[in-house]
Image 1 (cartoon, rainbow, N blue to C red):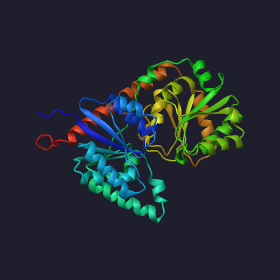
Image 2: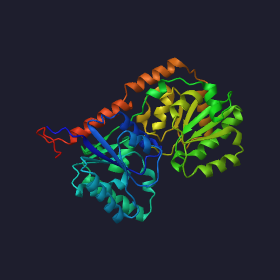
Image 3: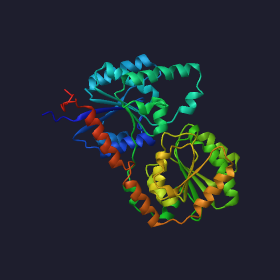
Image 4: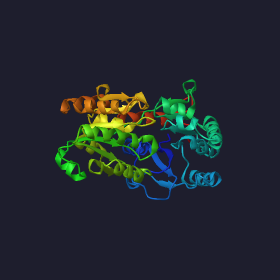
Amino acid sequence: MNTRPIRVLHVLGSLNRGGAETWLLNVLRHIDRDRFRLDFAVHTDQPAAHDNEARALGARILPCLSPHRPLRYLRNLRRILRSEGPYDVVHSHVHHFSGIVLCQAHRCGVPTRLAHSHSDTSGPDRAAGMARRGYLKLTERLVRRHATLGLAASGKAATALFGSGWRDDPRWRTHYCGIDLQPFRETSDRDLLRREIGLPLDATVVGHVGRFVPPKNHRFLLDVFAELSRRLPLAHLVLIGDGEERPAIEGFVRRLGLEGSVTFAGLRSDVPRLLSGAVDVFAFPSLHEGLGLALLEAQAAGLPCVLSDAVPTEVDVVLPLMRRIPLDGPRDAWVAAILDAIGRPRGVPQRAAALAALEESDFNIRNSVRRLEDLYSGTLRTDDGGARRP
């Protein structure tokens, strides 16, 4: 009987902090590492936030450079697959570019090839120019031809990569990325935590977690917060994350005269601790999302959430905490919803109930990983029950 581990190569930009990246690290933490061996092919040779822990857990970080030069990239990927393999599964997380990744994996004889859509890019894709539309059509065709399975963080994310008829193809399915609930069971000293990150002890704190990129809609959030702070002078906004737009958003804060009321917390490894101990209400006005893992974390912390109606509804696990507001409506509606959320009672019972709901859901990392283990194992078997692996 062959008992060697199933070998999986994940392909992504890097292992820096982000929704999909944090999920992958949690997968590595919770997967049965006697049965599955995970490596990561990344599109950078620079160190990333999660690299050291991934290596400590037995994974290898394999730079696969030049995605903007496809021929060179294909040679680099082929070298990795042949010299570091053989791999049983290539699991690609680079959206449309997955078509190129899985085409090469197919050529190199990898039996199971997964395209994973973590984002809803339908809006930007519709507005793309001619060259971009040509690229999208080509890569969508490659995904359909070379993927043996396609996973998506939500129905919207599935449509963005697999098309509006994705439910008609048995290869395509949703697979909800889970979060680790254990950190949300721990208690924090609220005052100590607020002092640590420079928040006023008596402030009403609105929190947001997300990269500083246009889809997260930070400018809209700041416009809303500017009006909120006029009505509630003790309001404070904490922005957790980093990204290319952060300098521009910092400038926007200065133009609004909100420097003393907005804290840029940067990239943090303790987001559950901050949400549970320092934040009163969570705001999430994204223009589009694959799912919105930060909203799962906010619910696990028992926070009332005010979010845009563009966010996939699958993320609404603890319904009493969720309040959806249209982005094209008046900003006053957002301000009113945040003020209403601030006025709701919060405490241990509400947080315990929220955690219990998430514990039983598909968004518990343990449930998410068990489904992934079954998927990896199941796709590597023939109809007669024998293993396809050598």
